[in-house]
Length: 468
Image 1 (cartoon, rainbow, N blue to C red):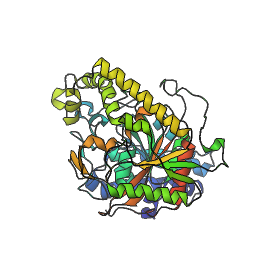
Image 2: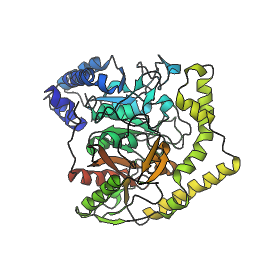
Image 3: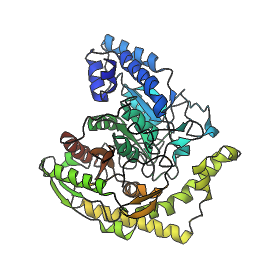
Image 4: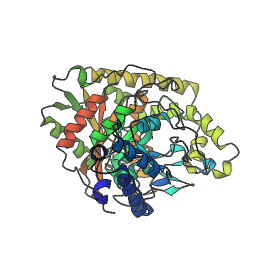
C-alpha cells in the first residue's frame, strides 16, 4: 500500500482520504518513508517539516468528524526553499541564511494549506535561486532521479527531483526565466507558470526583478497542476502585481464549443534545438491534431527580431544586483559561484536598458499578434534533455552555445508574462525525458491546461517512473 500511495497523484490521494479509504497519517508517513529511502541518492530534500505528522493526525480527525474538507485535504506537498514557511527553515540555498525560520507562510503556501494541504518538506535550489543547476554551499547538489550523474535542473531542481522520485506528489517552485518549466522537463513532471501577477509572490525571495518572477505548481499529472492552480490565484493585499479580485479567465471557457487553433514551432528565435527534441514537438503537434484540434507550424517574427534571452539579460542584471549586494554584505566569504558571477557582470548602459525595454514591448506585441489568430502555441521547453552535472557549454545541432541558451524557449514567457506549461511527451535515445511547452495568451490558463490534458490522454510516455 505504501508504494501505491507514493506513486499516486495528489488528486487520487485527496479522493482516497475524502472517502476514508486511507488516512492522511498513512499518506504522510508513506512519503516520509520514501524520503528516507531514496533522498540519500537524490539529495532533493533540505528540511523535513517536523509538524507534518501532527498536521496529518489533525486532518484525520477532521475526516472522521465529518468536517468540510478542502480540495487537498490531508495531501502532503513540498516547496522550494526560497518560499517562506512558518516555523520551518527557509534558507535560500546559502549559508548566509542558515537557520533562518520565517514567522509566516508565503501567500502561495498559505493557500495550499487553506485547501487542506500538509507541508511535508523544503527542497533544494541553487544559491539565491539563480542557476540552471540546483547546487549550493549549504545543502549541496541535487541529482536527477532518471540518471544520478545528471542535473534535475534549476532553480526548482530539488522540487522537480522530489516529485519525480515520488517523495512528494505536489509542490511549489519559482520561475525567473526557466526555473519551474526547465526542471520539469529534465525530470519528467508537469509544471505551470501562470500569467504574471496571477499568483502573489509575497513571502518569496528574491523578488527582484519582480516583473519577471513567478511562483507555480509542480506535479506528476496535469489534473494536479490544475487542482493546485485553482487554489493559488488572486490578490493578497501585498503584491501589487497581483491586484485583480475578479477570477477572470481568457481561455476556452469564453468560447467552449469553438475548434481550438494551435501553432507549433521550434524556431527561429529560440536558439539551436536538438533534433530529438524538435521531433518530440512535432510528434506532440501531430498527436494534438489527431484529437480534432486545428494545428499548423508557425513562426513569430518578433522572436527573430529581438532575441528574448538577450533582452532579459540586459534588463534583469541591473534590477537584480542591488538585492544581491544587500544580501551578501558582510558575508562575502560565504558567497558561491553564482552570486559572485552575477555581481561581477557589467552594468547595462542607460541606452541599452531603454532599448531592451522597447524590445520587450515588441515581444509582447508580437505574441499579441500571434494570439489574435491562435489559442495556444506548442514549443520545446529545453533544447536538450537533462545534461551532466557541471557542464557550462553545449554543442546543439552543430552550434556551440553557453548554458544560458537552455533558457531560449522559456525566457520569452517571463519577459512577456505569458502563461506556460511543461509536460513530457517523448524520450531521448539515452532514455531521458523530453517535455514540450504549451503557451497561452494572457489570463488563459484554462486553455493550456485543456491542451495539456488532451496531450496527456494520448501521451506515449505516460506513467513512466525512474528506477531508484
